[in-house]
Each structure stands twice: as structure tokens, then as C-alpha cells.
Image 1 (cartoon, rainbow, N blue to C red):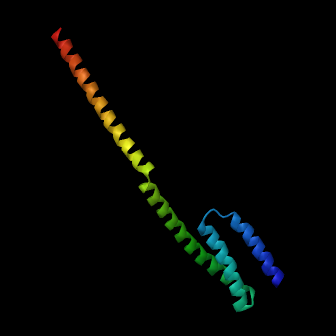
Image 2 (image 1 turned 90 degrees about the horizontal axis):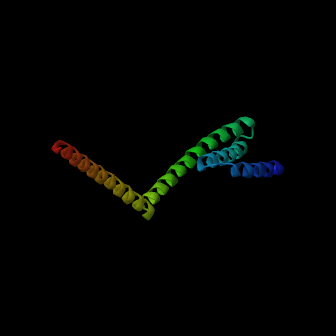
Image 3 (image 1 turned 90 degrees about the vertical axis):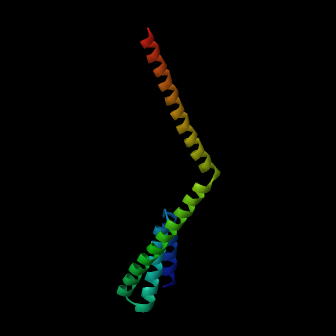
Length: 119
């Protein structure tokens, strides 16, 4: 039994390294923990499978919420960073620059039309 637990633990650590986010990691950890708990409680395959399923679902839900929270924190940090404010100001200045260029071009064309009428 001890060898089985150590082997399972070693394989699980290897799988965790391949997980991209907390939802995947939580699902894997939850499945392993649930399987061990199910086996300890039920002492049969059915208990192990039920524990693995419930643990995987619970681990996924918790991990997914952690991912959402981390994304919100990162978005807030990006929005409040000086670079973000600088980019917003740059965008505003570029829009104002384009508006002024269009206004100057319109005035140039108006003057050109007036000059053509005068001839």
C-alpha cells in the first residue's frame, strides 16, 4: 500500500508540472486526494472512483476561481500601471493629431477651391 501511495504521489507531481493553470492543477490534486479519501472510507473501487470524481470537480471549481481572481488582479495592475496611462494619453494625442490634420487639409482644400473660383 505504501509503495502504491508513493508511486501515485510521484506520478501526480509529474502531471502537475504539465498543468497550465490552477483549474487543471486543482482538478488533478482534487482527484488524487478524493481517490485516497474514497479508498480509505469505502475500502473498495467504487469508493475510490466516487472520491476521485468528487475531488476532481471540487478541485477544478476552486482552481478555476483562483484563476479568475488572478486574472482580475493582473487586469487591475495593468490598468493602473504608468505604461497603461501613458498608452492611453498617447492614443488621445494621436486622435487629436489626426483630427487637426484633417481640419488643416479641409482648410487647404477650401482655400484651393476659392482660388480656383477667383480665376
